[in-house]
Length: 95
Figure 1: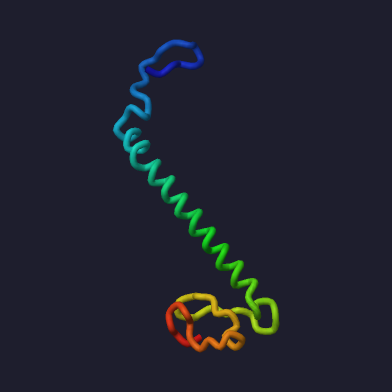
Figure 2: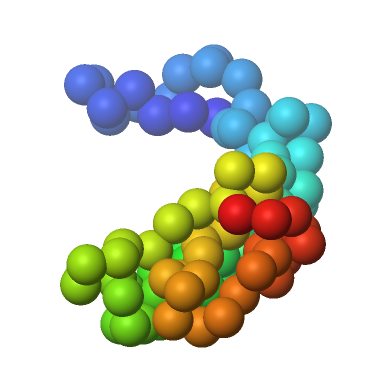
């Protein structure tokens, strides 16, 4: 039973959250899914950071010809003139 904090005595407030069907589902299913998705999100952010670091450190990103985005898929095209790229490496479309 719950405890009435103001008077220090037992009250009839019903089961605790973890004792309910919803609470059991939360702790057995929902919380682990949240942890899994947070780990996946962290991995994706790390990969994005690595990609952006590589792109920003590439030739042409800070000079006269900045990097461009592919219109079709959004991939970064790092100064196609310097690297001889005629097509997007990700989708194959012409920039």
